[in-house]
Length: 450
Ligand code: F0G
Image (tube, rainbow, N blue to C red; front, side, top):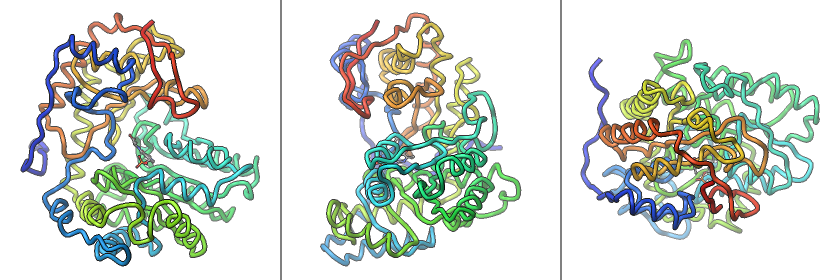
């Protein structure tokens, strides 16, 4: 098979900053070992997130100029609406400024004291929004999803029996909705199969519960379905995507992922009353219904991005280039969550530095090491991120790949830095938190090395 190349050429470039090891040591200390607190200009390869960091296409930039900035009824809104309706079949579609704005509106309406919200695995802002409403967030991943070495093709799946058990335990009247995150970000960027979505749908039907997708990475999920699920190989991705949405009653989307835009979100639902209530809240806190806190030009960029993300040559390259990083890391003996995820590779930091106990944040130690060695910025997904809630199953470091931004040689450089760090991993030191906020501490906590 010929090399799967980047299916684009580069029209506009942005310099990235080389720094010395000494400079990075200084920046790391100034940032109190929290890479969220680094200045981005001092980062060489930024794998902190794939959210809002993608490169827009020439057609998206053309859309930016076309943006209709009318307060109400802008053409840009209708282009956005038509595109999302075309992809998902939904009629009730609201633009929001990003995914968590959609979540905040949804859970303000459907959450609340005494309620329980099941998900395969809640993303951190989803969990925080569920709990902010007074409800309890419950994660129900399949057992295979918790074992880093298990190569189950759909490790993002929800444990359907556990969902049934939860409903039996708390009562269907306490469950306002069931959510499925596709792909399952906090569980390793792993996909959810159509079969699993159908099975969850069947449970929801039996108990008359609405099913919502957290559909940030719906296109990547659909590509995994096409390439891994029996009987799906011949179907166009767009058709699989449509079936995923047909199976649910609503969705929240951060367009900063598979919308390939720098800012934007979507909230969709079938229920007309819920839509009316969501519209009222949107107007109260985000903006009028035809712009939802965005500029007309943002809606244009989204309309175009959601079209481009469904191109199969793009998805083939996208999923392959993430797998390339993951497979090379495995080759060098670095344990990752297998198989490689869609938007990111998740390194098992507990296995990388067995000498650092979970209470001393092995993930944060690896994150600091990657920056110190090579100016690479990654993100801890473990006891720092989730420790205020419950002890997480794994101590992970996420290398998230921005869309259409880095080339293969950038990724080869990341691999070289990893090889160096791996060779001296016994020298990595644990961390202690010296200052932290009451929630979502990973964004602002300050650390020191032990
Ligand atoms: N749901 C999932 C599965 C996400 O990954 C994110 C964001 C959100 C919801 C919230 O969307 O950022 O637009 O408000 N994930 C980013 C990340 C931040 O780095 O994984 P948002």
